[in-house]
Image 1 (tube, rainbow, N blue to C red):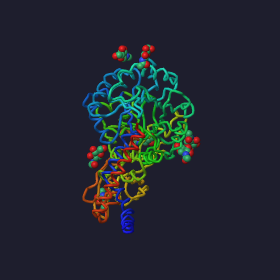
Image 2 (tube, helix red, strand yellow; image 1 turned 90 degrees about the horizontal axis):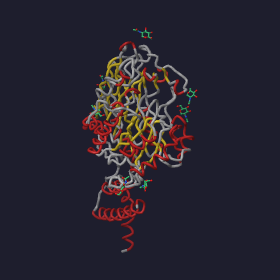
Image 3 (cartoon, protein in one colour; image 1 turned 120 degrees about the vertical axis):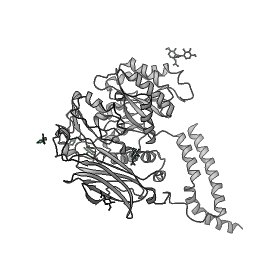
Length: 522
Ligand SMILES: *[C@@H]1O[C@H](CO)[C@@H](O)[C@H](O)[C@H]1NC(C)=O
Ligand SMILES: *[C@@H]1O[C@H](CO)[C@@H](O)[C@H](O)[C@H]1NC(C)=O
Ligand SMILES: *[C@@H]1O[C@H](CO)[C@@H](O)[C@H](O)[C@H]1NC(C)=O
Ligand SMILES: *[C@@H]1O[C@H](CO)[C@@H](O)[C@H](O)[C@H]1NC(C)=O
Ligand SMILES: *[C@@H]1O[C@H](CO)[C@@H](O)[C@H](O)[C@H]1NC(C)=O
Ligand SMILES: *[C@@H]1O[C@H](CO)[C@@H](O)[C@H](O)[C@H]1NC(C)=O
Ligand SMILES: *[C@@H]1O[C@H](CO)[C@@H](O)[C@H](O)[C@H]1NC(C)=O
């Protein structure tokens, strides 16, 4: 009896682990319980309140809905001091966010003439941080960040104390769950990690170094320096797709390397695994790194800021959002295994490129790198490459072809996910080619997806090169999707005894998980 039982166990146990791993309900329960307890990771998108003069409640809701469908948790509202319509904008923004169950936090902008007086910071934080839509760190405190403002570093001890006092009653509601304001994570990039990290009132730090120097590709050298002074306190890692600005009023006219950046940087997020990520940006049209929609009225700020031409109109960047739900789910996964098993809702293709060769038109006196950042100046065409860039989120491998002006070539991926499932990336030189850009994906000879983009032209309006990127996207057809569910398990004969034992072990594991949960979250 005991012998035969042993042999039954040895027969059942090894496959059991495989089954347990792919036991969907259990996995779901465990991960949802775990994430409720330690839901610390979040992704913000930097949002310029200055660009919302024409917004109303409906516009705010439309932007928030798009951000939610991209799995973004909150907008970090960039607010400069003394902007006349800020109060109106915030009223709509918080109402919209509350209705849609979205979150907002402040990124107080101390740059230029917008220096924030201490008492005004106290007022705005006391007014908005108790709101239900205000984003809170896991300890319940309202998260507050800045754009620069190291000169005011000494204000923050008092600000935190006074705001906590003034909101003590207000935050004593079911939406708070902690001790008021503030969890303070400033961006003081201009003074560097050591000086920023020496300020006692900080709870974490953010970096604005999201773009590489000259013709280098982006790496994590700066990020690891910021993280090393924090000793485990939260870091907000900046992630951006592009940078081109040409605004006379602000004396700005330069590019930094975009190119592969959107792909590379998200892989760097997965590698460093910070607590928070901030996408730069949702709607900073003037610096060409928006991933939000082109809102008519909002993009007109370019004219007010003295742009010599409109480098944003008809240059959508929505296609940069298509992989965010997948990438953000990977970022939030609790283990390497969970990461590889993130569901791919739809297979998608994203393609971006500039609409003229670097040498085709005048450079508009745009430089590669910026004197204002004490960098060595280069030609913009040395920093940005004349290439078509493509990324695809795929269930399994696919072939890619890029056609420019009818010259239809089979091209390579430069990056392939190790399991064959996930985000693929590549690029191909434009060469001397001009004309319509069409990128096509095929799997085993059958059509998967096709993106028809704008033409690469030989001339530019006003003979000025637009160094911004045009972004397109396409969705894969379902018929050509491999059937695999990605978990690799699920096959084999599930005899009644195996299922029974599986259910029993499931119950025990659930109990254990609950015990762990209560001991760590209590
Ligand atoms: C807030 O400050 C007032 C005046 O100093 C003090 O009386 C009160 O106890 C403080 N409240 C809290 C919650 O700290
Ligand atoms: C907090 O509530 C107490 C009692 O309700 C009240 O006396 C006090 O003035 C309130 N403090 C603030 C800052 O609102
Ligand atoms: C930027 O790159 C240039 C050229 O490679 C190099 O000389 C310079 O030191 C770099 N600067 C920084 C801050 O990395
Ligand atoms: C990271 O890139 C910078 C330029 O952006 C370069 O100066 C530095 O050497 C790079 N670091 C590594 C480890 O490659
Ligand atoms: C465009 O500008 C470049 C550089 O300023 C100049 O060399 C070229 O002749 C201009 N082309 C036209 C068509 O005006
Ligand atoms: C390029 O070739 C592929 C495969 O033959 C085809 O599906 C695609 O439509 C072609 N693209 C263009 C623009 O003709
Ligand atoms: C492109 O992406 C946007 C979201 O960023 C989506 O709304 C749209 O349907 C996509 N278009 C195609 C053709 O897949």
